[in-house]
Image (cartoon, rainbow, N blue to C red; front, side, top):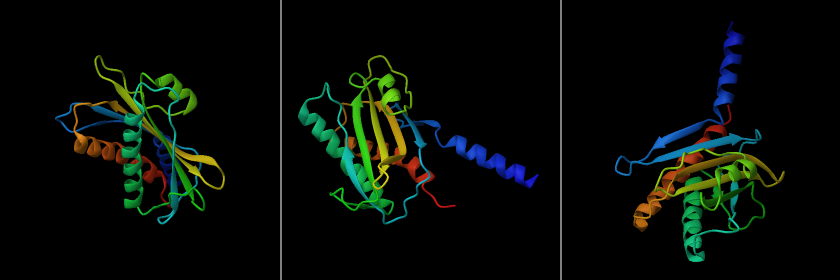
Length: 190
């Protein structure tokens, strides 16, 4: 009976790893953030592991180059800050790191859910909403030695162009934190 209970607990735990969450944002914004992730390999990284960033860009985008650079800079800073706060060490060089953090940001008009599913294999599936621009944040952890993806995560939400610079920074940090929580949950030694 005890072995059956443990087996059932393991099966339920494993099946929850790739689940989707819709997280309500601050009540004043009345928007949703859908998040999904999947663990591809059972590789774990202890605190102190060194990482690098590997941003990926959509080939054709409706954003101006300066807008794209600004958004990627904001997400780069948020990813570095988030991982460093959880004990990892950033390196601007890809040499000698334990893992690479690849990421991309795109509007639904530039990168459809179908393409995300086909190319990335993980999509939160946030439904479109009339009059709101949907955006996606895709992120993955790739082992530097094996050159294989260990974990993939994605978040989708609605773009809030009315936000000022400080509010955008806070929102970006929140999105990165919510997605990375799922990585941390699967990166624990039992």
